Length: 200
Length: 200
Image (cartoon, chains in turn yellow, red):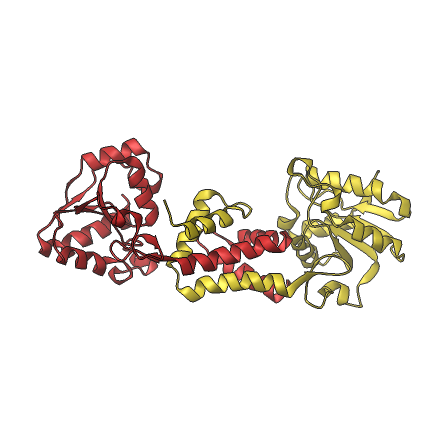
């Protein structure tokens, strides 16, 4: 019904998370109506984001082209404690709380057999290699307090037990079934203070 | 907090209709995680859509590069009746109902002083020029049955009265305050059958 290039764009937009066919159509028609430079700016921003950002060589957080993120470039951070999170947005949330002065490790997801996410899709090999390099005393597994996050924490606790490193999980205080990203600073701070050992 | 190219992409995505800051972030991080070719395909589809689609010379509906949409290229359509709609998606909805065999005119919006949409932002000049060319017996003003759509219909009725052409509006049957795009075929069909003259 629509010209092919428009249908192709609607298809591509519909692949984005949380975007259904109706939203994809609305977005595509909006982009059709906008001035040419506005549409090109979005396409350009997308290409540039892919070209100009990389994942940090150390913690896998987003970084600019230098290959080292802000936290790992900061020499004042305590490198003996690693906070493992699912997502770069979680790093921002923890930083905002001010409860943590160590370094991070970003898994880029959580185990979810239903969605086809297994250990190989997460940045676990990179974490192991950091632990193998030595100098790490504690790993705080700060995955989301929901089913996938808990399963990932359990998996890591078993998988990393060989390193003999203290593994903890932030205390409850985070609402169960919630999303770490939306926690308020006080709650996140309490959760860090009350962290307890993780049973494998 | 995030590298600049990522922030730029989040900003651009956040301009899309119905996309808030959180959704824009979720989409940007999804695009960061995807394989390079997937992200490039979206950017490419957007540029191609802009380059390969145009608005129909006659009715302002979306068309491919030829400059004439499917309906206006179809010689079996009744060119003496024009159905005026707000949006290309409304053309699809009316076509699906099978209630109409004339041609269309797409305004690309409705009058909305609050959102800064006045008559000059709509494709009204193109409609007038079609009527001035002659051969049109009836204009069916099929804008959405809500405040903006009704105001647009009233405006057109006054603005086009000089042409001495019968102007109608589809009968109620469309739920008031609703969106034409979501109407079922039977309702749309009844609405077309029961159309009544528009009072200026």
